[in-house]
Image (cartoon, rainbow, N blue to C red; front, side):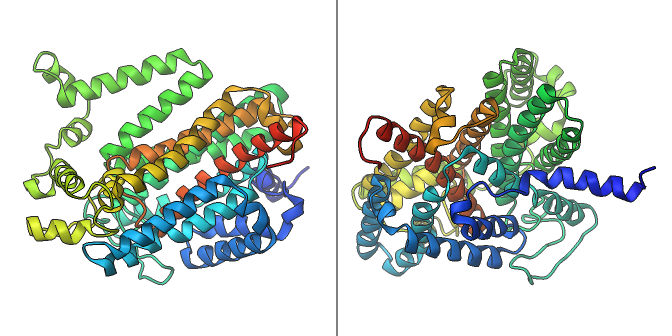
Length: 458
């Protein structure tokens, strides 16, 4: 008869089994260092960043020629040069020079990591590494809100009772919105892994997969509950859109109708006409419609997003070409409104204001091209298995995981339409890692297509 502790050990081994192998033996230690760095980044950011710097340097030293031959990196080099030029022309040049730290190092990271990723199996591994730290982060957030837990700044973050701002969970992040975008990432990747695991279990009937699936369900449910508690309207809307995207991709019509019905009911209760609204407000919890309708807080005009956006549009009209310089929105807004704001709650408006229309267009073209190619790639069912000569035994799962990354990074983009996430080191790093992973698979596919026609490799 099997002893109980051995049964528990076996179940734990089953859960961590997706992290046990190395899909890229040609870069064994680099890949291992990258995995460890990503895993500990949210909890111990300094150590995670040091590990990523080691990975970055290693790839640049060993794959320099491949990096400089990538046209996407040429585009980023042009953008970097443009940022340096406008910093010399900025309203406050010192602020703009400091602002380069939020962008330039990540261009080097992107150039390196887009070479590291070649196979869909690596995307699975990365997804696991990104979602596993969410459980302790959520537990800390709940303790912060309901037990007044407090932890001093000894790991690169501080746990403040009742969150930042007070009454909204922020956990290990400096502000609640950074936790919101992290949990959106966890929710999307967790959903993709859960569905892929369920499909694998359904086809193989492997009972061991049940434990992996249960673990993933715990992560998805806990991240969804935490997102509700965070009370971020932006995150709520994007979570609904992401769920709808998964339902449409899988052809689950019942879930499509359920998501549309829920969104319609909540939207009507929040913003709808008087006909039917009182009745819906009795059904839909006030926690949702009062927050969406912004009836909980009284906000001065200077703090409203619409005021900040209008101010950005006025600045863009005054300097459409060169912009005002990085990090210059804050001093300009303070001089005009006598209120300090770190950003205008829209990354795209902020970059257009600070780097000019030219700078924003360069970045938009680079990101847009990669995302367009990724959508085309996921629509061609057989191409993912051909990337870099890979013969996949789970093509259906590979397509789903790649689609999951598209949804996760799109969530980043949508979130930044109404907020700015580049000022948090961990969130900014995760965003660039996601983009690098998608780009790596896209470039590997292009390499396959070129070599298949008998031409030289890209």
